[in-house]
Image (cartoon, rainbow over all chains, first blue to last red; front, side, top):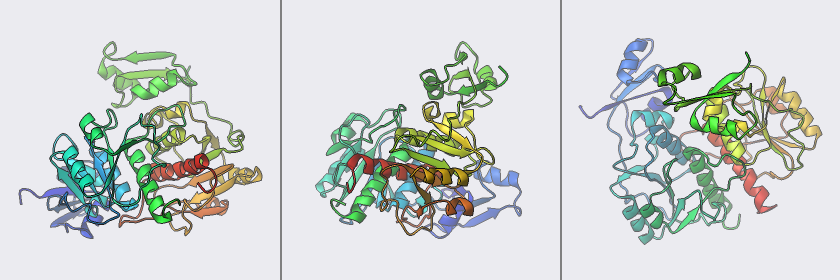
Length: 223
Length: 223
């Protein structure tokens, strides 16, 4: 029981209910007073509902690349649970096979991340790995092509082939990919910038690339 | 002087400095204590810098469609300044010609929106209009093709032609386009959903569509 956690918010709780961790208990306004909901959630952001659920069921990192057209997104050192949640939401909607995050020095799937994902984490496969570069090496061994997003890369994300098994690696918003992680990629890509502000936020960049991958997959090669 | 406002945050102030409203005065930590910065900003989110600037210089809504390949984004009733800011950031990076927002019942370019845009509002043309549907009618009169994003539309955003003058209309995250606004569009489009969660957040959806428009424009017809 000690390792159960409390998620909060309308959509996170609704998605948990139809996902992999049916709540053991749910508190709702007005039966439960707002102050009590805030105390239970540990956040004022509960939207009138809090649920007690099992710990987040992380996926097996070795299973994510099973489908021969799997698109897996790897987050290298994303620290902000809201970014993790927003990327998970976009990944789930884009039909990605899953997300890989580091075990340490990175955001994990906390209730705040679940909230920011609008509950998408309840359906998406998210795996934790001890070492991101090692996992990328294994992915290459399984014929996945590994693309790393890097602001200074010459190649546009629209110019590469997103068919087959593909991995997209995203670094932290501030400092990008770590050298060893960048070195483990087959190719570095960027989103060309047309304006004067020089970057997109992490979840927007992730979504733009994931939906280009999806577009290519639906349209077929050369589509 | 009374109509000056105070923006805050590192990137918003830096972009104002190289944009259209050079600050009249800047306060920075540690010369100015954190409590004083918070009071000046009216927000704890100041990142150690606050600047006094002129009111936001809204653009002329009739000028946005001048370029014959202008892509203009219209926000129908987006209430959240963070959504407005995030969409403005993506629009500026994607090379959109500008943004149109309603004068009433919608977020305006507040300091919170400027912060959420990472300062992109200082470079992007943002115009306010009294009536969104009327503006769309005028846009059609100037040979712009008007696409409205609607979750239930059959046509995918990837299947339409984003060349020439184009307008993308986005509704509020909760309730979508108002009927009169939807009726003023040439065509309704959607982003196909591959997962179980049924929607993207507004700024992610806007970015995915804007970057598809940009991809088509760079690749040329059929690219």
